[in-house]
Length: 395
Image: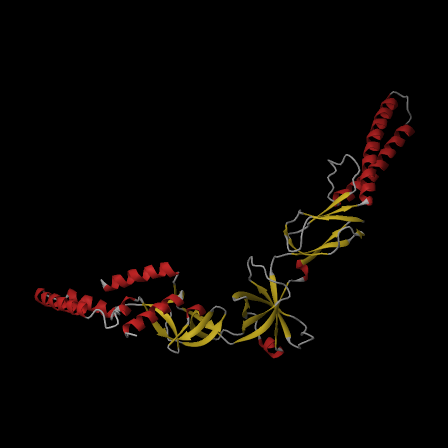
């Protein structure tokens, strides 16, 4: 019954305080160094949106820091150049329709012998010239993303669209400024990934292998990093080597050009048992982890009861009754505390020795692979044990 009660209490405490139970793992650990790293993005992740026409910047549809998708509106420009192009295109379209009608009539007259081959050829050449000019303008207007199907009159309004997904980094031109063609309007940062440029001593960098691992700590969070390459030049200011890592940041937004601490694991030549860093706590001046309590002594007594004969069982029950009476009489000490309150805490502590750490994990001695331990919610378990200890000693 005591073991079942302890198990029930443990489950209730785990659910109430979000106490997480994990298993000790066996992993390879090696030597590591702590270095500074700068959060960057590669040059191909930074792009500029430019205006393809001269004009006057009338309006921005976006703000700095805003996320945009390909095809979203960025800015609006009034362009006399576009006004001229669109008017010419409409004029050529009308001229082409008239020339086609003339060619149709000339062909009919030619069949009747009322028009010469020279007249027919002249009309065909006229249509060819008009179509050539119109097709040239059509190509330019299509590149400007002007919808020719709805273009019924000349327009000077030119809308600039995003050519890729990303985040607006800068607005490069002030409103109502006059700009030339190919002028950068907006700086766009593509959030397809962040990189870390780590700075470390040259000798350490030259000794590193391609399978090194790293973790970057930003605002109390650890981000695993994948080694990309050793950059060919040292940093001119510090004289240190530079290593490029890809940060596994998922959808988190990081601040470009900010610095953070990076831990680089340079070799995996030793094997240790590891636990989460969050599992360690200082208890009576020693590092400990908390493990689910198992009442093995009671389990052995329970198996012994199964082997008793009827006479022994009666004596055992009699002794048990006397023990219960004695326990009720001595249940509270002079301060009103329960002498057996500590038996109701379903966790015990295990002293460990810290060896190496990397990221969110730490290698330890004093606990075995596969054992269960409290990896989260340690504060609540420690509070329960301290309360039990104080109550048991009558403090």
